[in-house]
Image (cartoon, rainbow, N blue to C red):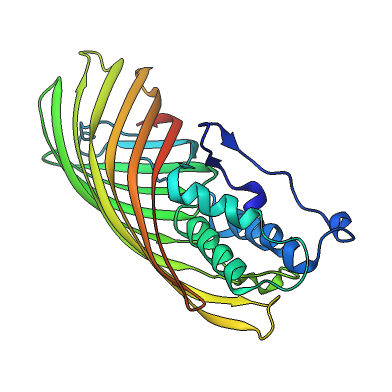
Length: 295
């Protein structure tokens, strides 16, 4: 997974490492190769979408109204999280992993399990209830989120507050990956609270929204290090706390709108993987865009 992780380095440019193939085995041991292979697979299955953008304005749908949309989102990690992935990507090229290398792999795995820095599909459907209430169901690569909110609104301006619960979906045991380091099957639950303020034009052609959002997520699963001697086995037990800002723009006419959004969060990850304690922080940037149809 380290081969495909999206991180921001010190220069600020996104880095995506080249894939590791079996052809590299003559120069690299299976122990070193696992740092890329196992974690690349985990991102594709359990990651792909550390960000679950809102991509809706502050106004609620009218009673009985339906909105459905699809698009893309991406999460870019900086700071400690980016450094942890880079360190894991640079594991020794020969021999069994020592304790320091195992710890580096655990930190990189924690970032990829908790933040899932990657590009992911985004899809959502929302339904309006009477008295400016609204519920929604969102899928963002690895996360399924159910939320409910209430809006205080007039024709032009609105303030909405709500809450969402989320769970990781699609994760599976990584024991099918050969020569892997950590086999993690994170199943997580979490909740978040967004507070949005917004404006829309008279005809609804333009809408703007911004606000704050905070939440927590707990990830649990199993982890093992099968290139070490003796074999290291243990639990994956991580918590992720985050808070930050949300900014969005919608443009469209009648029943079809385009939406773009930029979220930025301070994230704190703590816990353990296979008895290795992990504590790191990061600022993440999550851009997203979607087409949304209303009925």
